[in-house]
Length: 364
Ligand SMILES: *Cc1c(COP(=O)(O)O)cnc(C)c1O
Image (cartoon, rainbow, N blue to C red; front, side):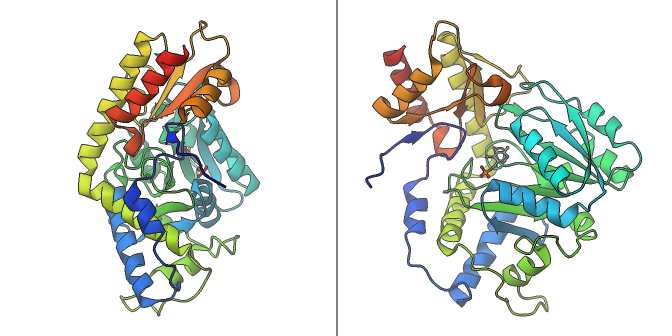
């Protein structure tokens, strides 16, 4: 098959830079090769820098972002645990489902799709006996950034863990695991990191590790995974657990290198600028952002499709097939009503956005 050249401005995957594709195409070596071990060390160190954490346990889980979610739940949530789960979009709902499947007593704090949740409502729901609080930091289904104010302190007071999905915010919107007091977080490679899908960076701090127990899942058993991913400090030599997706680790390491070369703060600022530029340009064309000012997620712009656009799906199809540009439609209650435009890494550049605007002007 000949794969078309698309400009990926949807909800992910995002554009993968040449350097990352070149890294991916290097020869495959063995998963216990010392050269690969050195790369694993560097990749974990780079992940710590991008997560802004000193957590020793910071590694890519094999699988897409959802694998990170599953690894978090099977290692840190026990059946019967009361877990407060913020749901104001598809990814919060997915987490509530995941928790329920794992036997947690899920307390859902529901909010309108397109708005952030009031942190006080989440804190109130913790009550006395909650074991954990989960929120989605960047809701990709609505383009909303969830404020984390006060959540870590409230969790600490109650001896609960703060667990966060930062799949779409990592490297695209300010998030600092240690400063925010987050106990466990997971992400994905194909959003603001601009690597191909297939790995889920995960980080866990000491408070979480105290609760680590032999996993209910063999594949995601963190203790066994750490036996493969860590060495030194008296740890036994790396032991085979499963075969790491070697070439994806090359790609992730290179993508992280690009993020760090740019600098996290510069990158966050660039995403903010690109978001605002595109928001204005689309507002001039009748597309208003769903999230109110102050609740927007820089890396994903979700806009209402105006009534003047009779068939929004047909426009997206023409964008893809005639102009090679992908954007995403709405999900759940927002299906048919909104467009979701990724402002992720290489997609957060004026040239990419201008291509989209020019194509839209042709089609509308
Ligand atoms: C994309 C995404 C996921 C799931 O990631 P997959 O790679 O599709 O498994 C989870 N949470 C959020 C917020 C996402 O944007």
